[in-house]
Length: 253
Length: 174
Ligand SMILES: Nc1ncnc2c1ncn2[C@@H]1O[C@H](COP(=O)(O)OP(=O)(O)OP(=O)(O)O)[C@@H](O)[C@H]1O
Ligand SMILES: [Mg+2]
Image (cartoon, rainbow over all chains, first blue to last red; front, side, top):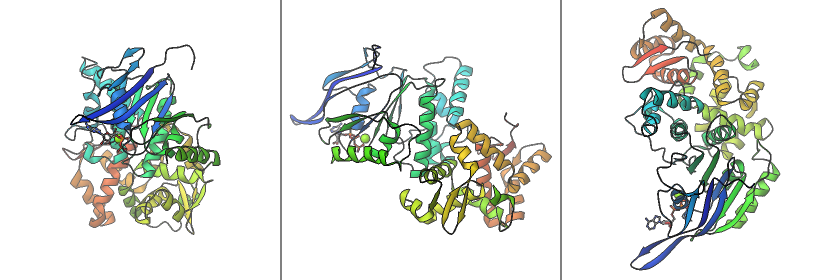
């Protein structure tokens, strides 16, 4: 990491829930940075606080202690430089693909023609041209998630955050979307500049990330931060690939 | 694409087209990649296990990939083709273009495209399903129509409005 200011700084973020005065610690002093061009994955067992961490990072939740800085300033939920993709797609069933993508743009562009043009560009970037007037019910799971990705990208964020975006898709569809996310990330003409993704799949993290942050189970603590220096495109059958998967596996179990 | 070119043993292309109503382009690309990663050849049972799909689910994906000329299947071995290697290297846009060229050549697709062009006005869903039924039987026509809309939209060859149930030919994308 050069002298440039990191895009994102997660500084000793802890989170607890309190029930009848009793403290339940969910996250314990999470600390890492993310720079432009990074692809970082956070992996950890179910319930270790991955979603909570991501919600705090995008400003949808507040830490009990610690702070999150984006470009040096405390994160705010309405920051258009950060976009989020959810596992559940979160599409409006009564809106078409184009309308679902345009929806998030109302706060950014007053001109409806501009909104339409921006939506069109990102619908195309995710391979959905031709489905503009389709409703979510007409789409496969993979296509639905493309809409979610197009909608997130349409605000032209620097940082794209994703919470298990492929975990409800079949293995073939998921792999295809992973490749397409890598294409978008490595395309300098399109957002995002950086990706932060949460997953419980170690294999997925090793396939995608150049850095993997490993969390322990409850409370979520950082067990390791690993640079995955495998060349791309990566092959999931490569022995070196498997070496990384095994190493992370042994850290979690 | 020799498996399509020679045409022998391929008397039922319409049935194969129907299998395409059950699969998505993402699944086909995912399959091609999975086979590529193990060196370009794999037996179907191994792939089924790896992607955690039983043969009922993998079957139509394999069938559609074979129909499109992206894999050959022989004695349970799946082998990727040069065309699918090209597809794997391609960008999202280029992939669409490659698949558009394949789709545009399929006889069932041609039938409907010609119908739409000759009509000069949008075609109603019922009209198309009827024409397909004459060719493939009424029990298959709905599935073939569904495949036609999905792949036609993906390839940017047709426009379909599910509210008005109208199908139109798109101006050829460049
Ligand atoms: N509002 C809340 N009040 C109390 N506990 C909560 C609340 N939200 C989350 N938790 C608890 O915090 C823990 C972490 O939840 P979180 O959803 O962040 O984990 P996760 O790693 O994303 O899990 P999963 O793998 O299931 O997605 C869980 O044990 C959950 O029950
Ligand atoms: Mg979660």
